[in-house]
Length: 147
Image (cartoon, rainbow, N blue to C red; front, side, top):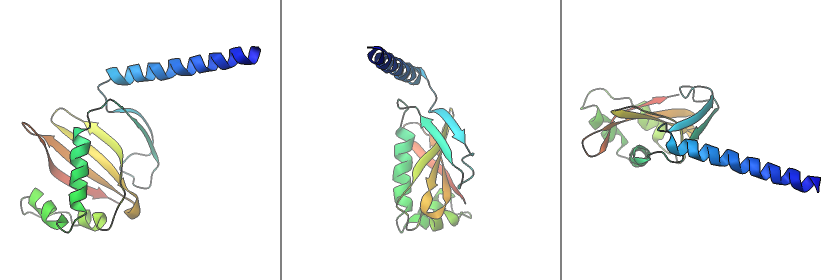
């Protein structure tokens, strides 16, 4: 009898906590709800990030397409064209060559742009992608690697 009441109380408390979290996430404008651990600048550091499940993922979808393009043989041309022919960071193509995995570890949304940080575990590096909001689309004006 007491065990049933305790179990029902635990289930009710869990349901209320999950409901409160979802309510908070739905009404929050922030993309990152919780962050713990080493800074995203440290590739080897362990970061725990809880992203808002209701966030706008347009920038992430654009970054995913960009990462897929960097993994092709056109990586050098893509990175050079971003910098308008000036010196480019060759580490980007060196890191992205022959990789298959990546995971979003951080994002920071600002009024005109968005910074996304992806962990590349095979190369123990982080790929930093800046996305700028143009009139009707997102474009990638800057990419860098931290090892």
